[in-house]
Image 1 (cartoon, one colour):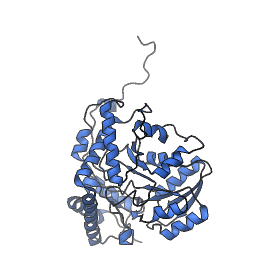
Image 2 (cartoon, one colour):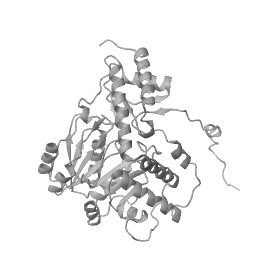
Image 3 (cartoon, one colour):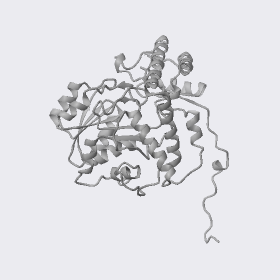
Image 4 (cartoon, one colour):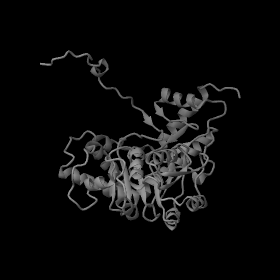
Length: 386
């Protein structure tokens, strides 16, 4: 028998059934789960070191190689969200004193710079106004001035809805003996990317955007050049959990018997495997086309409401996340809250309202639903005199 009395009673809230609203998620992520992915989350657990689990992990690796368009052997999923993949990249590639050049045109560049500083790297941020991207000239000036070991760029900066071109940036970095790290969390599956052909050394993404999988796993791949830098480190990475040598082993990337490192999120990996299977069945080109067409229709409908798109250059607009300038006289918070409260549709705000169309959510029907909700919000939300 217990020797002490319980001081904390069972929480009353946990004695009630779990209740989840039926909501259309049109923010920058997470996105709604496709039915097949939802079903995968209800499958029975197996051991994380079982041969069947290793088979699933191998299939996930092949799926990542497909969506990244890479043949890199060091390709795997990280047990954590996109932030975790970013830390995995930086913890393994940077050592104290390394020069780190960061494209900071939104929140993700700012966070990469923050992590780099925590490692002890010499961080040099190239700051751009939200909505702008980095030209080859911008990057070359930074490379020549700071001589970095690593450059960070965000392909899809979801905080402002801008798309970063990538052709030629890898070759430019390599001429300056610099590795190229790209965040494609908000863009993967909705925007073309060719890791090997574009000379990207490290690429990472998340599970919860276009892939329509639950948050909590992320995708990452390292070129042979990046792998060589990792294996030539003078110091151990600051994180054991994210030490790429250990992760390479448990994911079968080093041709050695797999050794226990950590307990991988088995059920989440089922879901990730199915999300990669769905995009493989659809085909990358078809997925890119779906997002391009849905976005063009959304832009047409938004402008029909008199709304202005935040990113001025049409070629620089991210097809997966559309940012809208806050309409004159309105508080964007009122609009976002009205759409949620009256229509059970999530859009988000920051610089203004933003609408995401990710994976299975990228349909004309959903565009019609959200633009109708926005029309009603503009009609009913208070408009203040300027």
